[in-house]
Image 1 (cartoon, rainbow, N blue to C red):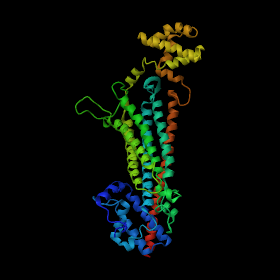
Image 2 (image 1 turned 90 degrees about the vertical axis):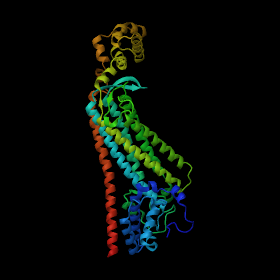
Image 3 (image 1 turned 45 degrees about the horizontal axis):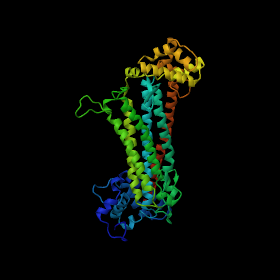
Image 4 (image 1 turned 60 degrees about the horizontal axis):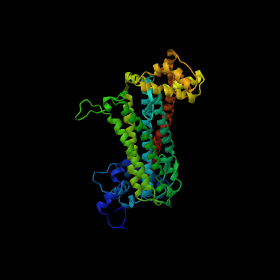
Length: 492
């Protein structure tokens, strides 16, 4: 018997292939089998099905394959699984498999089950990326690097300061995913098609067996909402936006114009025609996949924006974009982690880049305020004029300041002088950083404490993620125990 009944004539293979989700249902196949197990256990426990029927169905599900033979034509894995059960057990037994449930609540449940796995995997990968970032800090953190605004040299910072910025933006991604998880981990099972069911199904029991923390309360909302999909893709897109910016800097820094870093050969590629090339291909693909994730976000929002309640098959198309965005985020995070773990900074080029780049001009302006009692706006004007004279005259900034400071300061504020010895401690990029006192600044003396704080953050994240993973393992044990108990009771 065809499990879709006799209301309609047999659908043609072309239409079935067009509307089918079999091509991407492999990710939720195991979850679908478990959902069927939990539902049948509930039917058994409530007495809605006989022990004989329940035992036969559970035995079939225990041996069911999550990987159909190639070329199978079916609407989705849910239909395929039920049809296989009917073919194996007969409709008088397997016909109870879908009693009190619908494809609508099943698919919503299976997607949530797979998504929580993906969220945990992405959280673990982000932890590894954060560790790679702190590895760079330990190896290279005290080196001075130009800090940029508008992609122009602004003020000198340490490598540690720059990489702590990376770490902190990724920590917000971690927090977003941790906040997303409880909203994903709610069970739609028992909602049936949209109205709930008269069949005695213990929704809380099924939710517990499947590892959910609670229920999606309203049956219509349970089957028709995909806001958790949109939110998950948003989180993945934010991860991609952050690591795309990091990748962009690696592309720039590895270029001949910057030459700040040397990427490992493992994450680069040569040219098919130019033998000298070393192209940062891994970082480039990370940067490109960010666009794919954003495209998935827009696509899902466009699918959802005018869809009436409750379930419509349009929702099926959101799942493809969900897995694509999560896959892109996970693979990109892992690749970037490896890239950072194996790269090195080129100290001589960093030193050359900050020499005579005027990036300590702000330190000089602050010095005039603090030591010479000139207002900041006046000192800003004085130093700006000195930079202009240096640039136009192609003369070293230090010499320009020593020679021109008295004249320019007298013109714009009041006459002050500054010795060459004083000036060197102010204009030296490394020495200037020691004057920074604000928390979160780039003073090298702050690195050890900042590093320990972030190591503690990683440890805390690991504990939280481990608890989520442990909860899922516990639910798998509960399901196995309930399955074993149910089948043992039936045999007795």
